[in-house]
Image (tube, rainbow, N blue to C red; front, side, top):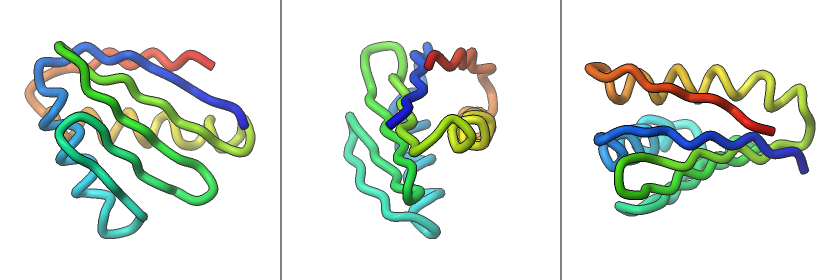
Length: 93
């Protein structure tokens, strides 16, 4: 299964994780706590893991085309969750 990963520096890691998971919980299967969140897009999966000073973001998908679609959607939604800070999200496959 292809994977796309980004390490995002932000002091709002917990806020971003919590808000993003709550936002998508109305549409998708979501589980989260203060350190980790998982969103199942079926068949893709987004995992957010908080660390001191940021988040590790991983998308697992069945193919590269799904990654192509999800990377900008995830980045856009993350940016909206931390509106007053510009996030640098560089996906690595």
